[in-house]
Image (cartoon, rainbow, N blue to C red; front, top):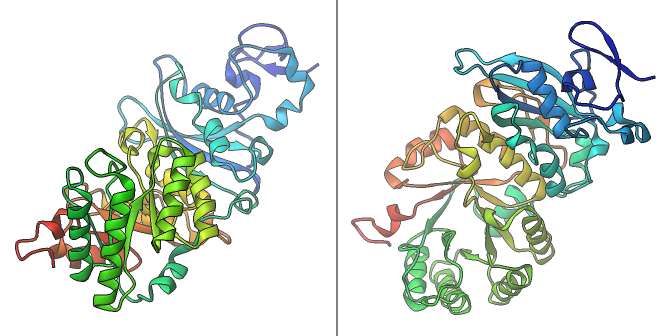
Length: 417
């Protein structure tokens, strides 16, 4: 008969009806040695008063894997001990008030569908963030095993292939967001695109909420923008691009817009994070099949990445996006209106670009991460930056980056060109 040991040292039947502390259900396993094939998550946990760290960690492990709120006899019909999430270590966070811990939880690979970010996230961040045993919960990092990474194709092109497509090497790529982002007619919108590209930029982009408003319908905007792109290419002799935002209310509409962009000769399209992971993976497949770069605007990310004690750290979102596959993603900047901590930003950029990320707590990497075959994602720096900060941006961010100057280009006192 399967049994567990209670906190007072008594043995009890694991399958007796009733509510049992998660620690006694097998979700707290301090003796567990994670296997190379396990997915490991590092959670920052803030337990409710009266809940110890081990029980809170076990609760997260249980609710993100096989548990429910009470004992169920149907556990006996499965290899439940194998499929349980296993909280195996908690570390106190120095100086935290209220007290916080980093809880390490290991998950067997068979718990997850191959190549599916929606399934991965439904387990890891599905129910647990509303769990009453916790005041707050934040997913700080994940270790993704090679066996799971091999079920993903990653970015449609990656940094190396993008530079080959553009024939531009040895410097950051330069871009701008059309301003004002709302209110321009398609013709005037196209004028801004032409002047910016003729003046030396590599890319201009739609903003996240530029879709198909009454004053600027998507088809008309695409026509004027691509006319501007082709004129600028003829004028400069360089490959140019405009991120045509294909975000829409349905996959059918997004595919229609993407196909029209390709017909007009666009080398790049854009999607918003708000379309969701399934739609993102679908557009990745389209971009790969059609040899079109895919730019991701992280619209909405701060609703769950900004708080320091609750939500999901952006480095985790960056990992998911590299796995499901985008060519560009906005990843923050060290100067400007949206500046972040330089160490954290370096951690984000390394996550997106490097083939291997060693454990480095100073930049937020809790685990070694080998990216196997997945190419790098080109990070995008944007948000209040301008040409006067170029030396700082190059120092902190390196060359493999898109420096996205919006107001800093369109609003330059010497003119856009």
